[in-house]
Image (cartoon, rainbow, N blue to C red; front, side):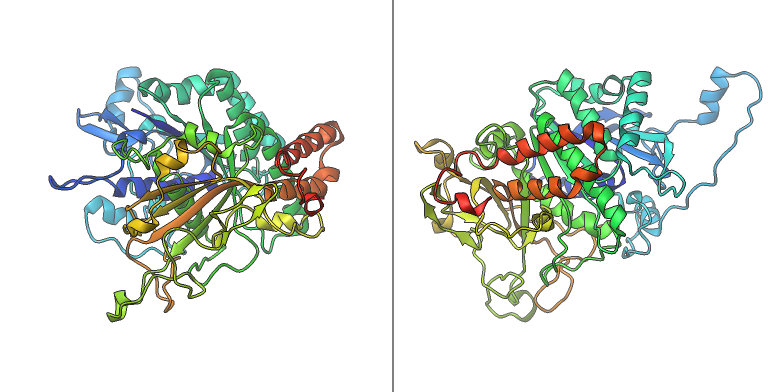
Length: 529
């Protein structure tokens, strides 16, 4: 098997991961004549419940602060045992139990428990990520950190040193890898890698940095992908924005040298296309968009290996993206493909993007440039840029005239495309002397719109899309990373403590330089200075 173990670090990541796991659960088929293209063993582990029932649960470890789990119990119905019986076997005397007032389950969770039709979720009814969770987790997956409380006004978990100190103290006391990660790793026959979802603009960024550092000590050659979530900053005071930028700068500085790939995800300050409608104040909404991009762009890591062309793994994808060995930060983009109007009115129209342009399922906004530094043929720019495009403005300088892409992985998922558009990935991967810049992966498995998913995708009439939707995503290593890191460095360098300023400044400068190598000696030198 080729298992992937997931680490979920903090509230932002748990919202994203809940959408992710709900989507994975939807791929299970139960009819004799149904077969899923997804290899469920990649993300799920078999086991036995307390009563001997066979279980199949996510290979994940979930960390959150006190109060962050909402109604989710560590012992679910599959593993719950009589607490009174367990207590009596350990203590013969009378026990006095002090119970905190339990959080009432959402009506959505109650409907799942009773098997009734689920009510429609709204931003007001989703209070915690557990309110829209559809999956059972193993008790070993649930790790509550009681040292900090969620949304505390007295001691918010937002400064870099807090995450560092929390990880250090917990690791000294428990050895977190040995207690939490190793049991899942030892169950894996052939682990293809680790997938980490974490906030990088708060104290979870430093917690993640220390965790990945320990992982590298124990699992040196294992691919580690980090998806670094950032909260929308619109409306935040200047000092809060600056704190988040400082945390992000420190996280990228440390994670880029330890992780195999780091993919920052954030909502752009520019307006989104009409096909995407978000309530930026709702973590349920924002995380849904992030999860759609993350789940879609890595779908090839969980397709069954019988699909010899479009099935791949984290290690191979890392090698394709990291062209020069120093490019561990990648940009992520996506385009939802709006269903044709024929779905509603019976006409024979083609799918379009938010601008009303007819789409092929191959790519859009292609950049066909044969410069001295190499061909950019086939490279795409998609509608929704989740890679912090606003960071390009941090330095106050003009944006480079164009983006130069070192490597790009394009993923299309949706209805089968015309054969004449099909790209032979096997030939792309192995059959050319010159390494290609664009690598295409496809799946007929559309992105499912579940009853736990918010109505963020809209058709041309502004109506919420409730059926599975086709989607295009891309992961790219390109020169905009250089511009963003330079801008980030300029914006935060004076706000970093003197003892760390030089080291972090040098690290960020070195990261930026890695995205200039190999093409800056050509005719475009003046574009990136």
